[in-house]
Structure formats: C-alpha cells, structure tokens
Length: 266
Image (cartoon, rainbow, N blue to C red):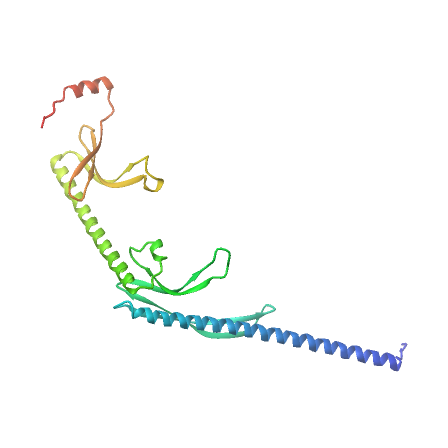
C-alpha cells in the first residue's frame, strides 16, 4: 500500500479549509438563529397587537353599555396558541387569551366593532372609532350592517323590530283563523264539495322582477259537477273569487247549458 506524505504547506491548507468550513457552519447557524429570533419577535408583536386591539374593543363595549339601558355585557374568551414556524417546523408557541365582548338586549345581539373607512385610491383604511351593529330576529342583512354610536337609536331599532314582529305574528294568526273559518263555512254551504286551502300566486308583468309575484291564501272548492272555484282569503274574513273553471265539455252544449241558467238580480 502506497502512502502519500503531505507537505507541511498542504497540511496547513487542509487545516485552514477545515477551519473555514467550521466557520461557515457557525455563521449559517448564527443566521438561522437570528432569523428564528426575528420570526418569534414578529409573532410576539402580532399577538401583542391582537391583545391590545381586543382590550380596546372590550373598553368600547363597556362604554356603549352605559348608553344602552338594560343591556348586558357578555365577555367571550378563547385560549389560543400562535405557533412560529421556520423551515416547516414549529420553533415557538405563544399562548394567549383572545378576549372580546358584546351586548345583548331583549334577545338581540349588539356587536361593537371598529368602523374602518377606505379611501377611493387607498387599500389602507382609517379608523373612525367603534360603532354598534344590531342582529337578531327581524333584522335584515342591510340593517345589520348599519353602525350606530347613539344608544337611543339602537334601543329604538330593537323596540320597533319587536313591535313589527308582534304585529306580523298577530296578522299571521288572524289570517290563519280567517282561512280556517272560511273553509268551515264553505264546507257547510257545499257539504258535497271538496274544499281545500292552500297558497295561490298572482303575476304582475309590469312590476320589477323581485316584486312580480305575489302569494296569497286561497281556498279551492270543487263541486260535484266538476266546477272548480278559487277564492282568495283576507284576514278580515272577506273572500274574493279569483277564478272559475268548468269541466271539459262540448263548447255548444256548454253554451246551451249556460243559456238556461237563471241568476238572481240584486
């Protein structure tokens, strides 16, 4: 086996190269640790920003509660973990409490959110402070997106919505009773007829597409001879005849039969 003896200069060169590799590895490790530390600092600053903003929201909710009589402050707290990732691995975990609050009044929820306004040519919004947003039964989407700073307006909105819902429920019950009464009266008037309640629809071709179709409560009466009569029922109990359909028959025979009918003049 041949042995190669290195000169002192070659041995020094190898030693220098090893030192350079070790130094490069230490430098790469230092850069990695610095990058990890920067990511952790960035994540901590982000979490601190969340917590600070939530504290502002909770404070604003308490301030609005004083403007909305009989409202109740509800605090919502979640335990969260913000993971810092580097090179596909979790290098740090920040545990924090995500705390926000909202108000409730008579079964309605009042969210307190920061009102951000965006300029026409800017993607960065400017804060206009906090506002109250109401949601609950009878509150449509458009209304729920409307912000309020005046507590009196919020109370009025909720009270008016409750009154409207009560009026709608009263009308609904009155309408239901009117249909049931009309069905009973028609069954008594035409004991051999088939009487059924249901929903009818009228079309207004001149209205907009969203308002073109109108539904109503109807009663269908089918007599023994096949004649079908449709009535519209109003909450007052009034009936309006919407249509009359006669059974299929020869046209001339039908006209002759109609000619023999006698009507009472009033």
